[in-house]
Length: 155
Image (cartoon, rainbow, N blue to C red; front, side, top):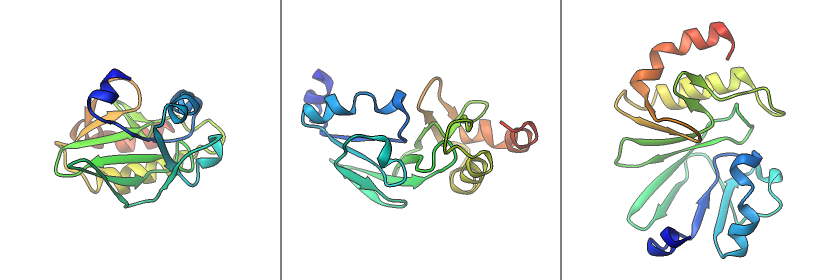
């Protein structure tokens, strides 16, 4: 909370509606933070402040963040690209070594592969730094050559 106060953070952009990402939403909203999520995942939250849509640009101070709908892990999974930077926050869509899990209700392996291939790999160059929702960072260059392997193995 101290860091949020120091930098005047008032908004939380949710990548998807799974409990490990949204459990703190009630406390955040009670503390005065605005919470935003996709329409497709909004029913996973008891409350929220804003619906995020594909290709929207969100201004945060001097920063501009593009919303990218990357379904597959959940129907409403989102990734966020910090414009004019090499940073891509992929939530649980893309990790080092493959896509996020799709065995949860609403998950769809073909859809997550399509999201990764068409919305991430086709759009961002190899130097793009991928910051997933858990674990270590990676780059598009490290992951893109493995797409066919992921498709073959089915995860």
